[in-house]
Amino acid sequence: MHGRYYRSSHTCKSLLAVTVTCEDLDFPPGFQFGAASAAYQVEGAWNVSDKSENIWDRLVRDKPELIADRSTGDVACDSYHLWRRDVEMTADLGLHFYRISIAWTRLLPNGFANKISEDGLNYYNNVIDGLLEKGIQPMVTLYHWDLPQSLQDLGGWTNPLIVNWFGNYARIAFSLFGDRVKTWITINEPLIMCDVPYNTGSMAPAIVNPDVGAHLCAKNVLMAHAKAWRIYDKEFRPKYHGELSLANHLIWYEPFTPEDEEITETAREYMAGRYSHPIYSKEGGWPPVIEKIMAENSKAKGYSESNLPAFTKEEIDLVRGTFDFYAVNHYTSRHTQGEEGEEFGAFRSDVPDVGAKYEINPDWKPTTSSWFFVYPEGLRNQIVWLREQYGDMKFIVTENGYARLKGLDDTDRIEYYTEYLKQLLLAMKVDHVNVSGYTHWSLMDNFEWLDGYTSKFGLYEVNFTDPMRERTPRASANYYSKIIKQRKLDICC
Ligand code: PNW
Image (cartoon, rainbow, N blue to C red; front, side, top):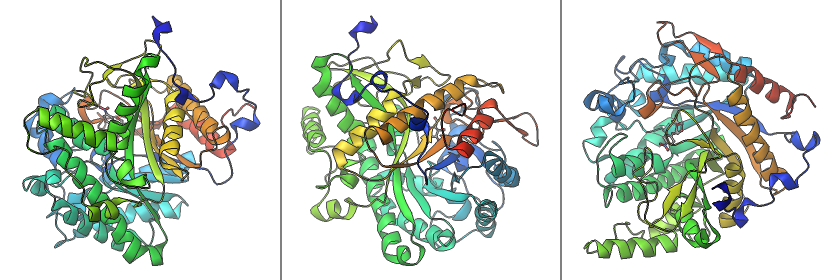
């Protein structure tokens, strides 16, 4: 059975072919380690002060059955009140940076730029200043899926006006925090915020409209990202000298058999290319193969134009080149086969339009998240593929982590990130990819979207039955802090 799986040329030099010495396990000077969280998943305080409702506040009320334990992020880790403890944890770990996100409706309760919340502003100033006082750099995501409900009511990410709405929000965030925040992620994971909600109805705004909705969202997200990057570039970069990118969720695809190379490459273009080619390629715009397939599919379905909204020449130029690094969120992989196949996991399919089937290799260990199987080589292969596609640039792993049940003795998590970090070192040292940082998802257990509180991703365990939400370091937290301190993977050598 396992022999049926074929390793593509993109698997590069196999790990087995490389003798890993202690020196190989060193991280180069300047390599930065961090951990991540996101506003809706940790902050709680969902209706405190003048914060208004966002699409996740709405979803967990309207459709509680979508969440495994019917829980909400109403209180979550209560980081809104307990941020001092969070800062202390980042310092105890010795992190170089902590990735947080801003809740749009906490800062701008109307969604629009006409009102800044004083309490919201104070909260983010406190967190940012608290981190800096301990010597930890804040990395700030502007949008981690918590769209103001008021903007959703106007069409949300399917309305092209969101490009300006997001640009205006970004400008305010840059002007308020840009003096202290030097690394920004504009938008987190277009694949999960456009394809999953509009294909499956399972994540907010849970509107099923795969033919049109998902693709409108995709284009507007890319345009909104570009708008924010250009605003920063023109108005803020000269004085603040920061760096921005968009974070992509990348599922690595390997061909099932040698005959499946072509369909696999098309699937990569659909999943990774759609959200990368417009920004990082020399020519810009959608990947040509996807444009072609989408035009054919739309015609076959009786539409009068392609469901993949075209970019004008001006739009192609606006989006192209709007990056300072490539932000990689990577967890898992699939084998790809050239036939219409089963729908898998939380996705109706990650790639419904290209006619590919996805398989899990039985050797890949499952986790407590239905979509997530462990395959460390996927990280290296994915990053090398991106470099081959778009050329040399700086990469930062902005998310990588492991889902399990509760418990402090999480040696499986240690094994997970050690193996993925080994693959990252191979990408850096053997394939010479410029990777400058690694971010562990997550600093602490939190509201894991559809899994509620059933999947634990934290370096710190959080007691969600304790009103004080006590946080306790796991074995993986201690090990991570040793890696950071010694700047090498095998802390024994
Ligand atoms: C990412 N899927 O989400 C997010 O950026 C985080 O907020 C999240 O907690 C983390 O990964 C772990 O899940 C994903 O269904 C959520 O494939 C769901 C999927 C992928 C990524």
